[in-house]
Amino acid sequence: MKSMVNPLNVSRFLHIYDAAAAQKGIKLSIGFDFNEYVSITRALPTKKQTYPNFRPDRSPIKSGEGYWMIGIDSNSEVVLVEAARLYDLSHSNFAEHLESLKAFYADPAKHAHPQDRCTCRAPSAKTITGKVAYHGDFWLRRDFRGQGLAKIMAGILRGASFAMWTPDFLCGLAERWLLEKGVLAQYGYAHHEPGGSILQLVEEDIADDDLLVWLTGGELRSLVDPCDRNELALVPRCSPARPREA
Image (tube, rainbow, N blue to C red; front, side, top):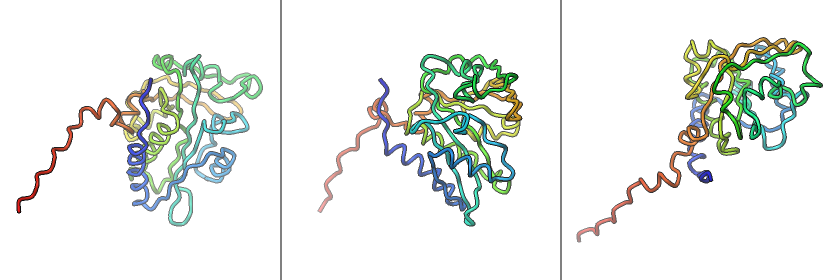
């Protein structure tokens, strides 16, 4: 049985990143209506189209199983967006979920093009099962890049995903240049493997060859809520205060 989430620890963790964003003049907010999210992202001129796994017209997300985050600047203009959803892979694994195209379409038989394909060659993808939190659709406006915002974005998503779902795994798919440029390290993923998703979605005009990136549930907990019941036993008790001398 997993230990309970300590809400104070999680709130303190989230506050660190929220405050860091505020210092950069960015106000963060989280939403749950993915129709609204698609409307926001479509209006961003330099952002690629949101992938179908975050679009209700292709992959509806049940209440409580997904959220998104945006950041706005002092002019109320969007600076960053990202999204997360929960996959129930208790009877499957992430590799199978990708290759069946169910990661992208609720009903591949209805929505997928006959030539749509996804191959997952990352060995560890077959071990990613249970409650799997998937993060994606990262976008950061060019004038805010190189300022540590990637770390802030990842921190908020780690904290929010842990608080909502305490998942068995947290994972994503990342372009290779993110690893080469050192951006992936800012996202805080402990593991990565090539061949996570060799993807072709014809009608979406998507052709990717992405890395698999992930954290285990235990690694996520150690980042967000490190002071669990076992660790409390290791914290020394305070010595009783000495009475003041008159």
